Image 1: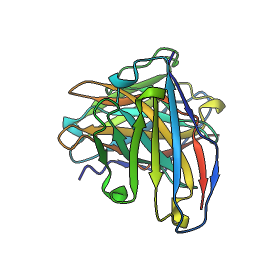
Image 2 (image 1 turned 30 degrees about the horizontal axis):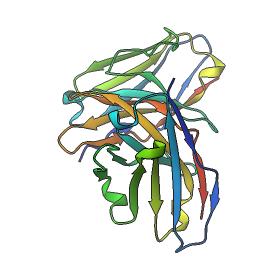
Image 3 (image 1 turned 180 degrees about the vertical axis):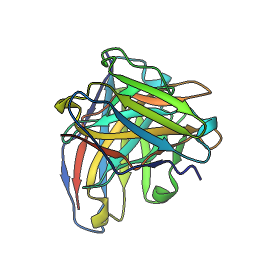
Length: 108
Length: 119
């Protein structure tokens, strides 16, 4: 099993830094990817391979990794960043995908 | 430019079956697997499985084995997800997604618009 865990919610004041962790026993051997999910919209990839950012994603979004925990960091948080954020890993041995439970980011 | 266009919303009764389509364009259909992910109301993203359009091989999450079948029609670059014995907890938005990756990684950089299934 590749259980991937996330805190249910994170709050941040506008202009401050939000950190969203993603943990798992086997995470250290995996590459972690992050998606932003807003109601009524398909998920959007915001970080891939732990630290890389797709084109078009603001530099305010960044990823890091330490031990068995990956972290999505959103600098200078804006109201438009309010969304659910999901981490995702792929298990090569089973060729299956696993999502974390998601973290609701509130900017208040 | 990659496009994944899904079929329209569906309303089904418990015990019925449904088939959702995902028409692809903008890339070589046989070169990428196609995955399905769903989100039930108030719940998180849940991976369902994938199909290899070239070989027809499939792989399903444990929760969906036996009730979900993925197929494809290479002549029209379209994949299908059939779900049988529908239950109320199958009510969700279903997404198809094209992965990017290699032997070390896999992530989704293209998504369909989603298909609402209500049971």
